[in-house]
Image (cartoon, rainbow, N blue to C red):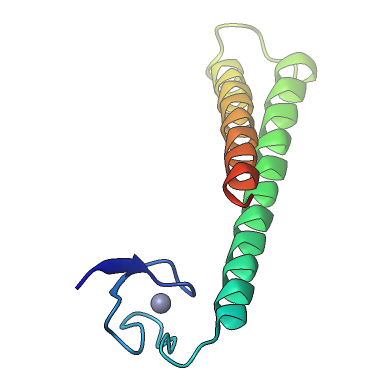
Length: 109
Ligand SMILES: [Zn+2]
């Protein structure tokens, strides 16, 4: 018995199991095309969520940046530090999401 990734929810399941214990996806009945379609859908959803996160990260970065320069706060203020923090986090988060998209695209080939 081996553990495989469920094509529907991605959780581990036994390759002997007919249905996934997590999402009731019937592995035994699904054709190769079904499984492929499910996996494509899963990848598409993941890509979509990463892209949404990229947008949020970008907004966080721009928001923090804008507030830092036009918010009328001086360096050293708590608000300035918070804005700087948002800026840094947004930047790093965006970078991480870019890497995740690249990795996801590579794994789909
Ligand atoms: Zn499942």
